[in-house]
Image (cartoon, rainbow, N blue to C red; front, side, top):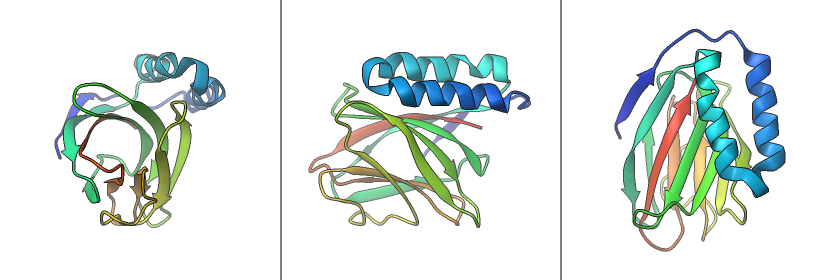
Length: 157
């Protein structure tokens, strides 16, 4: 798993980010693309660290993981077949002793789910893809959709 650091700044406006994320959650069904764009674009004003997760293919009933540079953040992840983006999820995560993950928003009729713990490939529900935060410092993604799916993402911390 390759993570490319795009920007790195300080983190002064937590309340503004929470407000924007709430807007994204409230409007995710009608305006998912705009919600994702607003979260990413707003990082310039918030002085956040943004890392791109290189695209990766994941076979059915398989899982992968990577270690983000910060143990608390927001993951914006896209799944799709071939080059097409079918689904997007925005997930708040914490990968330390107090591990947590929370689905903030997802595209309409999304198959995305969140949990905590290490994923091995068959832990999540069948016909779903699962994002998980674990105490080992890693974010896990598991594919149970029935065929190979491509994922790409952005980590904001």
